[in-house]
Image 1: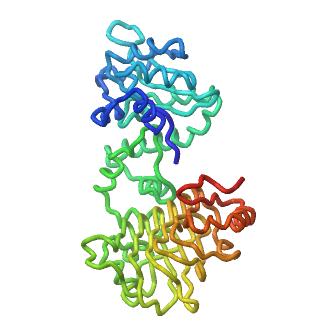
Image 2 (image 1 turned 45 degrees about the vertical axis):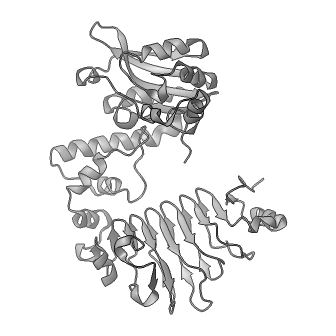
Image 3 (image 1 turned 90 degrees about the horizontal axis):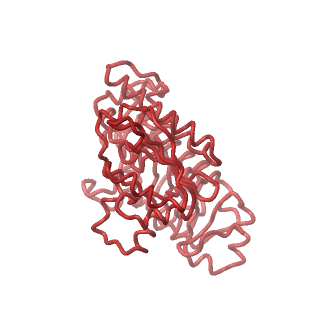
Length: 391
């Protein structure tokens, strides 16, 4: 997902341009100098900055060391930002009753809102500033795309409050906390560590049972439970390729006869050898699904998860023959070792939120490339060099 401006690639471009070294990397994360006392104040006002105001924007952040995109240290960065569009900053009252404490920044490029940041964890917007930020960004073109972040931060704040008071969470709140349906979004550029902190103190099997409606004895949370089989849900990242697994490949006969229907986390499988049966993987993987395999035998089809909440990685795969692809992949589909394709290979591949990567050798046949993009217009197909073939 593209990250704009203040902490994304464009800012690194600015820094490269003005000659900063890697030693300044910490400035990207923000140095927050606003005390708890002043964070409780919400009364304030918005100021708009354009290209003529880069000095004012730079100067207004100095006392509080709020380093939105390195603006606090480098006036040239403020100028670069304002060349692309306006910045709107919300200031609350200081000890003298003046509105000088920076709390929110909304940045535009052209006529579109591209960024909303605050002074919370990793530049997230503070809970008591959420409605103020929302009221402003909804007044600007493109602001509606931040609504999901707003609702996620709001709901997570409610869950934090409930957790602090040992109140029961609803089924919907548990699904949200465990990111079963989607990742929790925020206005910051890193996930709030309190998510894992809250989850770590909870009974995982009990929670998953409430959220999904599966008995606790059919939920697995360890590798041993996974290999034992007969579970419907597996919770946690399962990486069978790590050093502790002690192997680079696995025999098909060593895998469970029946995979769990749902994996809440990442599922990484090593190279599968001696395939002697059809491989039907979990129907639902909430994060990445990765597998190393060269070819699928003609008599044993491989059925991939129907729903993958992040990206699909098919490592070392030469041909997509005899594979039933996913109906929904929210992230990318990485097939960058594939160089054999037939016209029907992608018929089972449904929605892909990201891009489809293929081996660069495939793209030497420009006619096949164009034909593929015409037959599957919903897929953004590329290799490591080309951007897209849709047009």
